[in-house]
Length: 400
Image (cartoon, rainbow, N blue to C red):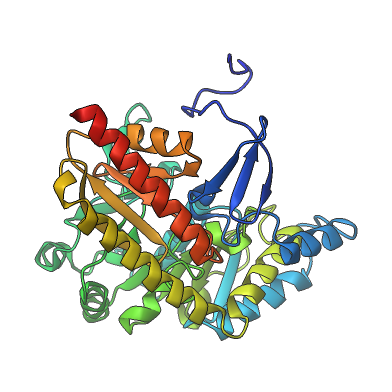
């Protein structure tokens, strides 16, 4: 098929178009059903066409779409209060995407230092393998040359340290550092979970240095870790949190959350968004939060995460003779992955899985990511791993 020449060629699109979705499944134009364990890259937190999300958006669409932030938006206040009540944050700014959330978080951190008279505190420490978005500033927060090539000079004020290496971090600290920006689990970086205790050590180092900690939970936040926020599992409180993806359940919405003293450094005129926090986005986010906070939901999710873990471990154990295909499991919660052997192409693995009706996502380090809807069932998990077994068998037969 020839793709429309009217669309800029920024994506290597797969030649499939979907007409509709039902729960954990997408249905293509030819009627084929696909188990969606890509979820729009961790966006469709409750799968497709969840009745509560549909009802919320349909109701709001018949009332009011947009007014801008020139006026009060009551729907924002409802969502902000729920986020604050269930987190360590006190203030929330709404935007439209993950890159806007991470860039907004950086602005808040620098503005906070400036408001205290520490104008030299502008540096943001990031980790190797990080992915924080594709704006010009966030390209500098990432460390992969592929993302930066051809876009001119990188934005100043970003330094990278080795992922998981505390000594590397300590060497870069000083009174010039406004904040440390870190993902509890690196999604694009290869489904890499922070080593045990790493985030706690980072928080202690930041506190000792008078710097802030920014938790980038754009991909792992909103329940995907098994708790509402991933930082909760480390017994720490970040100063700033960046959210997006699953927050809207498929509708574009992002958020910057901050402690009161930090967030209050942002005064009228210092930041803004025309579309951020519009009534449609807020109704969707509110419905997602209601589902996540429903009595017992997170308990069921954690039970399914344990089941998922066991299935991943079994797949590795049952395919020990196929070490030339799977190397190890990666990730945490419902942001999981398999690292493949160097002679296996992750793209080929994803393509074969798709041909068998399972949608997956590639990542760095030759990793295949599994990003199920948070309400996926054990039967669907079984279906996914049955297909994964078939993919491994096909790839083994091809290599023999």
